[in-house]
Length: 234
Image (cartoon, rainbow, N blue to C red; front, side, top):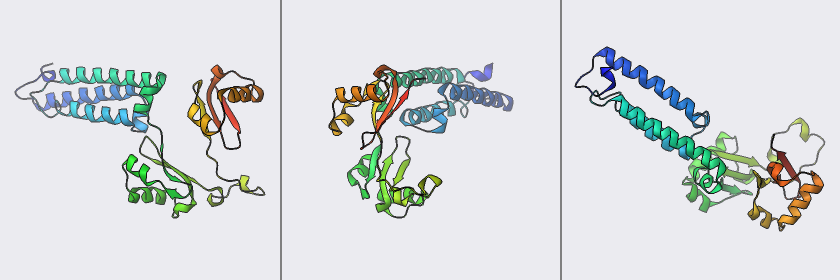
């Protein structure tokens, strides 16, 4: 196990053993971090990727540095990462830091330049994202959101959306983006206030429409026509 600690020099076999241990240790780390960190790089995932890549690279390229210290450091970081993810699922203030709300870039055919600066992207980047979605005209876009993962979600006006079987023999409805009014048993009072409604109105509507309690609701959305859709805990 001499290759495990810092040495003046390592032979080819020892370098190979370091690489093998480093590889399988990173596989275990990635498995512990979960599929989320692989499929989409969010704020916390990006921080972890920078730290882990930097920590493991040095002992794999410098024989005077041992693997033990790097592996201990990475293990602590993974524990902190998993703790942060778990707490963000339970505590809204922390979730807003790690998972910020989407930023509107285009609203009803108009670019929100202030939010472009907030998202730190240029108009060229926005136009590039529109071209990826085969959208050449900004005025066709009802809503474009800059997502926390660094992608742009684009919603066209109904009259500019591709035709499907459900479109035949039906009138075109105006664009309406559902608002999240309840998430994990908690009411979004800001959206409720924008609708001009109060908590009692919402609770009555839930009771009369679905006959469920607030504690049973995982997610509830509402549109401008006050059409409430509820998703319950399994």
